[in-house]
Image 1 (cartoon, one colour):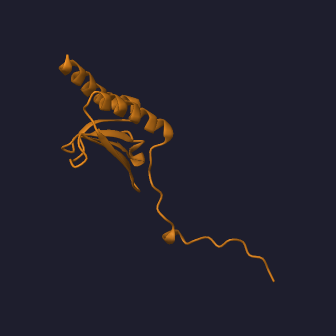
Image 2 (cartoon, rainbow, N blue to C red):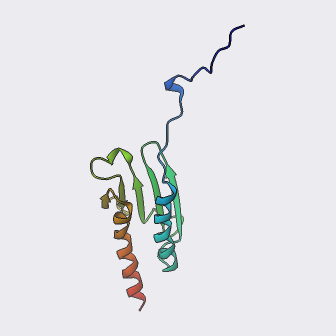
Length: 118
């Protein structure tokens, strides 16, 4: 009897890889999310890991459409930048290579909401 090594699956049957946020990226996103929840602006979120992109959606109420979507598209890494913040109407508010820089567009919203209360 001869020993055979493992037989690999054909490429067409492999599960597609998914794009997701790593721990550092989620830490940055959840930091601003926590501040916006404390300010009473945001109440819920959803995370989607798809084949081409990862999305962190922010909601004011669960039944509504997202207020903002934070997207990660690795295919755009060499071009426009892999991170983007998309508004409720689908308009890209900011795109770039550095997540912290892209998230600053949301921090401006936090400053405005704090000013409104005083």
